[in-house]
Amino acid sequence: RLRDLVREQVLAEAVRADLPGLIFTFVWALDLPDDSREVARIVQPFHDACIPVDFVELEVDRATSLAREGTDVRVAHKRSKSDVAWAAAHNEELHGRHVFNTRGTSDVEIPGRHTVVDNGPERSAAQTAEQIIERLRLPRR
Image (cartoon, rainbow, N blue to C red):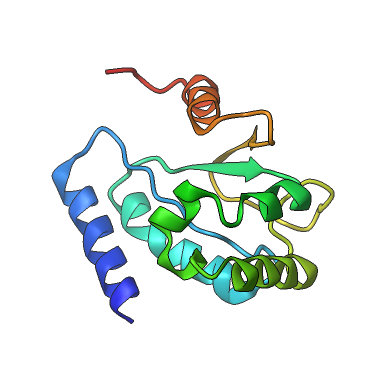
């Protein structure tokens, strides 16, 4: 509940503040109608204010995703990932039950502009960010 309240307030303020952009990340189980409704709810204030919304899908294979569990960066920024064995098992379980990527699925519709970015093991976070900037033609500071 607290996470949802903070999320709502940050997004509402972003709409009011006329920011040049906002990057908001989340995991979206594409096969869960509740997740899709939540995404629609999150972006609605932006649509109401005629602010464009872009969706960037980070595509990574399961092996790479699992290998990233327990890395220093992940543990430092996601407290729930400090129990690496649990995090890896949870990751594997979720990927076994849900659809997280659009590749190979024809019944998933992403609203607005949607691009897929390779977030594979050979790419650093900086390289992935550069690819997103280029694909979306975002201004640089």
